[in-house]
Length: 258
Image (cartoon, rainbow, N blue to C red; front, side):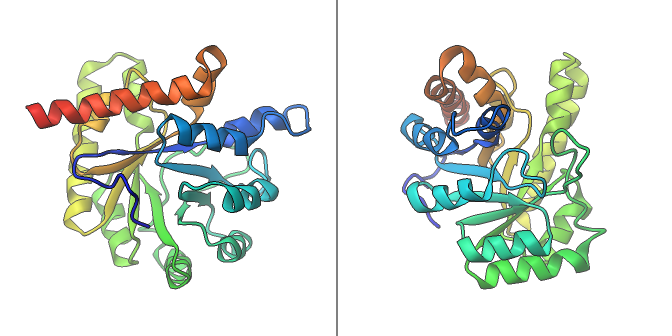
């Protein structure tokens, strides 16, 4: 789906609303409502909504996906494991995009990228079936050459580069390590674009860490969620999204002026 703001230089923002559902599920009921969060995200300048339907339904539920598909105007990116259950759900709803991610029951959040190179034959069938249904397919991967080549070989449309290691080095204030991870992301973004992949990035990005990543010219979209929902406790969801949107735009403006 081509979006209205797909203009040269614009870096899209996908807002992940999973942890609105996490808060709701902590005591049951309907509040806070992820659908309301999606509408507020749109008002604040998001370009898309991301939601991860996990096997254990720890945050987003099947009903949430149905409501989002029925009521939001922004493109929905459905994060999912490569399982038959999730494939059936995706083919039933047909979101704009599906992002295949690794998933383990014991993890608190997604830990590292999908091993596309090691799981080539298994993943190829899922990519093919989703694409045949008109769904764009993204693969959440570590910024490594072998994973990029494997993603291209199974005809994924998009790769989302895992920025978690960069964000960890940023928190440690290890400038040499930060620059090393940024260079790795830059190389992967450039290589992904060379291979004809649309390149996104995300995981752990904050107000403090987003701008250097946003300056990577080959990136088309950033996906950010947990930090924005956490910051919303203090300033409100719209304000947290507006702030990250400003920082992303400033990073791109600075590139244009350089």
